[in-house]
Amino acid sequence: MKNIRTTWQPQRLPAGALLLVITVSLIIAAILLSLILLATNRRMLVQRDAQLEQLRQNLASGLAYVQAHPAQPAFQSLTVDLFGDGEQVVQVTRKPWGFFDVAVIAGSKGTFQDTTLALLGSTFNVVNQSALYLTDENVPLAVNDDAQVRGVAWLPKAGEIRPASLPLTGEHRKGEAVVGKVHSSGARLPLTADSALTRLKSYGQLELTELLPTQSRPVTTLPDLAYSFAGLPAVWYHAKAYTIQRALTGQVVVISSSRLTVEATSQLTDVLLLAPTIIIKPGFRGRVQLIARDTVLVGADCHLTYPSAVCAYGAGQSALVSLGPDTSVQGVVVAAAAEGLAALIQSTPTTMVEGQVFTTGVVENCGTVRGTVTCRRLVYRGVGSAYENCLVNAVLDRTSLSARFLTSRLLNPTANSGVVAWLP
Amino acid sequence: MATIKIRVRRLPASSLLEVTVATVILVLVFGLAMGSLTRLTLTGPRQLELRSRQLVAHLAAETIREQAWHVRQWQEAGLLIEQEVIPSSDNQHLLTLRLTATAQGHRITRFQQLIYVHARISSP
Image 1 (cartoon, one colour):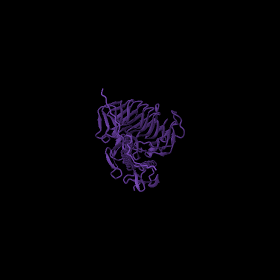
Image 2 (cartoon, each protein chain N blue to C red; image 1 turned 60 degrees about the vertical axis):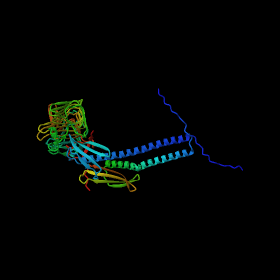
Image 3 (cartoon, chains in turn red, green; image 1 turned 90 degrees about the vertical axis):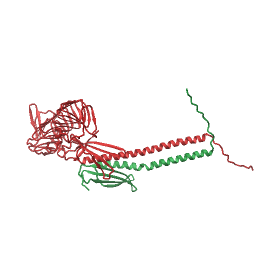
Image 4 (spheres, rainbow over the protein chains, first blue to last red; image 1 turned 45 degrees about the vertical axis):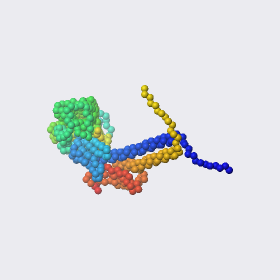
């Protein structure tokens, strides 16, 4: 038998083995490191997302707080502990901006800071959910065959709705003169110019101490401007008549003690114009609030988009708002004057207003209104003659206004608040 | 022009022991890295937490859209969801909507927001 002896001889492996092991280990280490970095990064992103989400919820809560407290003093920044635990805290500020209010909500979470800016308006009061409120001055409403009221109407008790029997200037209507419930109106308007509209009076009289912060930034020249609503407003004042030919955006107030004229080439967004007289040249397009002491003239083919406002408030003189043919306004149109003074909204059959029309006086030649009209009298002025409480070639249609349409709280003081627009 | 000369020398042949040591080091590095990775992923926001956060945000949005201000409790996706509606004591248009997701008795996520409501609500 052959004696087999097995002895283990340490054998040298080829040099490449160690090199291979080291290379493979380095590759695996690199892959693992990248996985660790990926996991860490993901965790940080998720945490960041959670913080941002919490911040957004806090800002939404802050907005709800501002909406629920309409009497919050203007320009006073309040620190609100949202849930009483001292952890979720936001700063809320309310400031007037023409017909609306601006809500500024600032908050922080971890290393993040954010601000929400919203333009606040309101829903419609019960009375303003009608197509027409015409005060009772013992003159019945006459509706021509080319005119129609669609929606609830508050009309004088003096008589039934009468046909106007004037020559047709528009299309023959389909259906009744008033399609909707008819109520008897009162001798007074549901809203008096002296109480609810005091803010407009102050704007009209250029008494701005309570409507603009004392630290407002005066602007000596008027270049193209874009100001966020988060900070202070830029205020440009000119004692003489001035013509605007600029691109202005955001929290910019343009004031003249004489007259402001807006050229069609101007680009105005969210801007506030204040002057005794404001003239908008034909063809203008923009989103702007115009508040005049006595006269606003909007030329033909102008389009003021939502939320815009056109207002003349005469505290010591009559007020006139004139809307040209083929012009449209989405928002609010107001002509108001103190008791005993005339207020007039002049329109044309091709003028279109979407929103709320309010005057303490007369609406003349009412065009198409998708919304609500509140006035003392309606006048149709033809060639050489005028007819009182007469609707000719006009459509007042409350039913086609979106249920989500929001208007100004000044005209609806008891209505609920809502966000009209998100601001830059 | 300067030239760089690299002298390449063959490595000496390795012993089996050296290769074994290198392999053990490799396994240790691998194990350590996997341990760290597992620790990082497990102590961070877990899948359940992420899922519950999404679910609660979705439920809150639904509740706000439908204005369904009810106090209720139900099971969904393996979580116990508790919805609380707390009217503000000083404002009739303000309430706190709180949604809490719990799993096996532990709170996973909480959604909390003040809501402005049009209809007046009664104080508690």
